[in-house]
Each structure stands twice: as structure tokens, then as C-alpha cells.
Length: 614
Image (cartoon, rainbow, N blue to C red; front, side):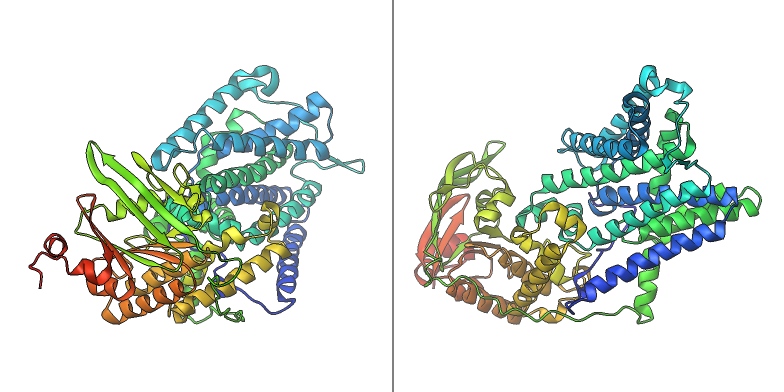
């Protein structure tokens, strides 16, 4: 879901990638050391002042909670109001495990985190088909239901009276009581670890997939990414850290009740994230710092915290939807402070050689497919076959059923009858991402790139299927994950050069003209190294020169053994690249054969060109 209240940017744009050996580890150490130094200085400055120790400890716990919500809302775009359920489960779960199961704090907290992760994964499934406002309402119902359960289950939660007698954690015999320096030194290192984990993951391919899901489910599936898996992963990771925040909160307060985890906590978490910058690396930290500044500044002005908080929300939503981080980024660009690090060498992309042993000819066949909408047949008994290295044109007037045929082949819609096969494998019933991974990849009538990604990052999405790192490695942005990214980055640059748009590689898609976007979308499709490419009006809206460049690219792709199905209304463009044409009219095949012969037929001219045959 792309939320209307905020415009988010892509964390870890590919233009920030560095390939200088050892520089990645150095940056990690500098970042981690800076964060550790910050919390140490904060703890020393607060000293024995009980008020400020409680403030900074609460801020550290809130950072973990907001950072967890940034995963599911900021990156994945899922406006989940059930986040507070996971927060409360972490709190109640940890203290009940200590009290009823006799676990120590050091065992109960990890176990409660594991429980919240499992519950988060379970919550992902009943809401999997919901989106937008329906998803928010569904998760709101879960949150309200969970609070009622907490109120009523007095044997475990204490009900409305709350849970009393929470024991403080002990460290080598010393009690770490909430509100003291000792408890701060427990929470602060955990916040630093979370900061490092959040930062690492934000630069990973996992987060790129989440952002892609947020912007367009259809485009995400088109590049072979399983949207449900990405969605479930976002739920699980968010639940893991929310559980940690809840456990730390419970042991700071030493008393919890249903009111401790009310919807006001969810509202505060959302607003803090919006103020800092949802979907950004530093947004949660900046948002928490801003909240503390607003609260303490308001108190000094005479109980004006609520007023300042309200004004801040209005200003951010109205004038800075990217939050404070967005303001800082725009200012840095205007002052010329944003810089690019060393770039990877461009890989000269080598598509499979049709003469090679591993590239035996393949066949994509469509047999007697039909598609009906409310009794009207959009496709009526269409048959076509395309071979490796062939460019087949699919033309016809508006409403002829061309895009419907492509939608059927790519798995976007299921036909009423008929069969689609890739060699001997049926594609009917497969999800679009499964069809793409089988080797049949498509583009769309209007370019569906991720607007806040630069072009090279958009193309890198197509390399997700080639990642060798596991899920944990991707989240931690391990050396294996970084190697995958570097290879995908270089490959993507090579594809952009092949399409003639590499000079725009580091420009956001939202800032580029339509012709560039069309060619970049083809590059993204080629990143999957497909056996067959379905191009839906790639020449639409382009100048003659741009169409010539795309035609040359299509011929080059076909020459390397990739089969192409091309839809376009520009007959001259189609004729320049297609060896064979199929003409559709009212969902049926009107003509089929060699390009020159088909275009000379009177019925084709009449139905499609609207004039007399010459």
C-alpha cells in the first residue's frame, strides 16, 4: 500500500553503493562505533539524574518499537494497527514466563520475542488478501480484540487491575531497576544493536523487495518476487523487534496493564515515524529525538507539549511528507552535499547463446485460450506459438484482446478455457511471479517502475531470483548478500547500457521522461534472463529515434536466443523487428503469417488500418 500521507524514499539507493575492497567493513565499524559513542555520552550526561535517565531509557525503548514499525509500514507499506498487539505480547509474555515458568529475564525475553514473531506470522495470513483501508480495519479489529482479551483473561494478565510484582532483571546479582542508570546500560546496548540491524537491513535486497511491494504488487510479481512471502517476512521481522520493545518496557515500568498498550501507543508510534521519515534509515531515530525535544520544550513553555506536537504533525503532513529526514535530504541535494561513491564496472551483458549446449531451443505455445468478462469474450480461441530467437508481432485495433492474451500468458488472469505451455510445462494456474521465474517475463502498457528507486535499483529487482543469500543473510546484509548485490548492480548497469539509458542509471524514475522509463523497464525484464519476453506497447509515446533504439535492442535480444512477443500500434515499428505477425480482431485471430504478407491483406487493412489496401 502506498500511503497518501507520506512520500518515502528508497533507503540505500544503488548510487550509494561502493565496491572499494574493505570500505564496507570500515563503514560498518564507524557507524556502530558512532552509535555506541552516542549512547555512552547520553548516559554519562544524564548521570544520576533520575528524570533524564528515565527519559533517555524510554526513548531507547520507543526507538526499537518505532524501528520495528518502520519495517512493516515504512518499507512494506502495510498500515498495520495490530503492531501494538505484538508490543503488548512481548511485555506480557516475558513477565508471565518469568512468573509462571520460572525463567530468568535473560531467557524469558528471547522466548517472548520468538512467540511474538510466530504470532506476527500467523496474523499475516488472515490479512493476506486485504489492502488499503480494509487491511487497516482488519488489523484494528485484531488490536481491539486483543485488548479485550487482555482485560478479560485475569488469571494470566491481571485484567484491568494490571500485572503486579514484576521482578527487575538481575546482572551478576545486581538488580537493574527501571529508572536507574543500571537499567539504562541494559537498554542502550540493545538499542544500538537494533540500530545496526535496522541500518544493515535497509541496504539489503530484502528491503528493496518490501519497498517494491509497497509501490506496486503487480510490478513486484512481474520480476519474479513472491509478494506474499515478502509480506509475511515484514510481519515476522516487525513482530520480533516489537516483542523486544514490549519486554523492555514491562521491566522498566515493573507494572503493566491493558492501558499500557492501548491504541494511543500505536498512534504515537505512527506519528513519531511520520515526523522522522517513514521508510528511511534514520527516520525512527530522528522521530524519537524530535518527540523528546517537543515534549521537554513544551513543558518549559508551560504545558504546551500537546500544542507543539499537533503543530508538528500538521506541518510535516502538509509541507514535508518525507519527514525531517526528507527535509534534510532535499537540503543536502540543494547544497551539493550528496555524493556518489565508487561505481562498479559495467558488466557487458551476455544473454544465453542459442548455439550453446545449455541453450537448446524452447517453445512458448498458447492453445485455444478463451477469456470472458461478464459473458463478453475478450479472447476467443486464440492459438499462437513462438520459438527461441523469434520476434512475433501481435497487432490489432483497440479492444482486440492483445493485452488480454499477454495477461493470460503471464499469469495475471486465468483463462476460461485453453492451455499455455512453456515447452512441456503448463503455465495455467501459476502465479505471475512463478511464470516470471519459469522464464516468461513481461512489460506493461505504461512503465511500472518504482518511482522512488533510481534506474539501476529498479533493474536490480529483476536479479532477486539469483540471490544466493538466505533470508537471515539478507536481513543482516551479510558478505554473501553484499556480493549478490554487487553482482546484481554491475549486471543492471550493463543492461541499462544495452538499452542505451546508462547515463540515467542514478536518477530516480520519477524524474525521468517516459521514453527512458520504457527502455529501463525492458532492462529490468531482461535482468531475469528470460527465455521469452512479452512486450506490451514498448514504443508507445516514444519518438522515432527512441523507437529505433528499442527496435535495435529487441533484435539484439532475439539474436541471442530470447523469444519475443511484441504488441504495438505502430505498424512501421512492428514490421521493422517482427518476422511473423498475428492480427487479432474482437478477440479472434484475423490473420497470421509472414509480416509483409499479413500487412498486405485487405481484411487486415480494413480492420486495423482503417483504409483500402494499396
